[in-house]
Length: 181
Image 1 (tube, rainbow, N blue to C red):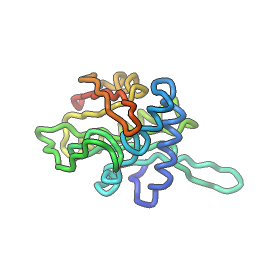
Image 2 (cartoon, rainbow, N blue to C red):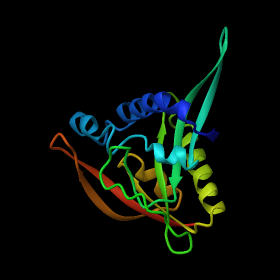
Image 3 (cartoon, one colour):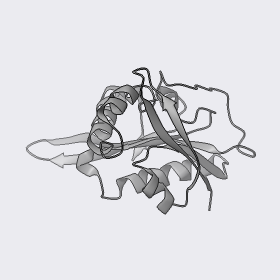
């Protein structure tokens, strides 16, 4: 695990698309996925600038040692709950750790690394970093696919939101909350 950098952006876009297309298909239609990629589901580069976005690297030792991104995720000290740079409901105002919940944002795992605990590792890293910044509560806009993991990690469902997409579809998102333990 390491902080993401601007140089990671192209690889992050590829990782996020592979994750969404490879892991979200059981909960969303192809039209919902197409409409959500790059807006609701995607990279918010503000998190990279704020130094609150992490990448998990995998190392392959073939003929040549090579690193590639296996997962990513972050947290935000800003009001935006979810979405990419071009996402709906952008709220760049800063949160107050004494009163507000840190926003857990954009956790994606490449399908090749799914179901190996990587999502849990990223979530723990994100929560630890937000705790160190003084936050005592966490909030997120989860995909339907992520809800079982987040419930297991102590998150509670607050409400379901149908996010309108540019292609006329709507994407169900679950707003979830957790008190830091």
